[in-house]
Image (cartoon, rainbow, N blue to C red):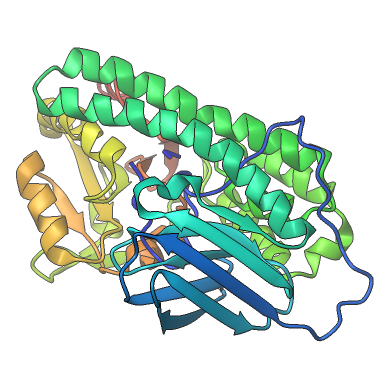
Length: 379
């Protein structure tokens, strides 16, 4: 997660956009026995924001609603109705404004400043306040993670790959710590909408068994929510893409508009690499991918990159700048990329190493781990 993170579509919360909390937080997030037919009113002010379109979106990764209006002197008011508490975001087209919060049918107040968007505040009912506390905790960690990741990126771009790699490892470790915090929170709050939301992002191929246990321990009432059903679906998807399973087949167009099929790589080891031009950790891994490709390609190793970009020029410019030599595909749907959805991708970089028979043999191999695995396979 690292989570470097320009988030990017309406409802994506990636590792760099989901809120977390520490175990010491003992906040109430609850069910109300009967939810009256009330509406929400989201009133906000962003210091330094000129009059322009601003958007409110809420829901889940696969089921979301969106509204838009024009701000006036940095202020805005959205009104509407939600069937259940939902993760939400207020943002502008350029994402200079991006405020994550939890929406419920009640008055919600938001304050922010353009020069410190990570410090945005949201307040309302218990679920909104819980998420706000969560978000405050995670943003503190996220700032530090992003700062280290940026230094790693800068060093790598300047040619200092050794120190760049060291800092990237540090950034990755800081990012991974969020999974521990998320797990602790889910365990301690089995009736929480926010915990359910966090479970969707905790659930990865590496945490699959634990994610199943956490989901099974949650209040059964949550299973009937939109989010609850989506978490169950994600767990089902992940269960199909673990090592030992057959990699789902797909076809997507390359930079020239020509269809590329995963099936065409049968008989070779192929690394399916999910990335995006805006993802610094992805770009930081490019030199290592290039090194491994040049070394092992003659032995039958291939890479097939799937981009989560939605602007073609950005995608192709990144390919050229990083000197990537292998096949690249993209449908320009951002986080809605069909292949990304098929593989349950919620954060990048991510990859799957597929053997000549089409079986997944490893996931998320980067840096020395990728080189070690390829050396083992081709020795």
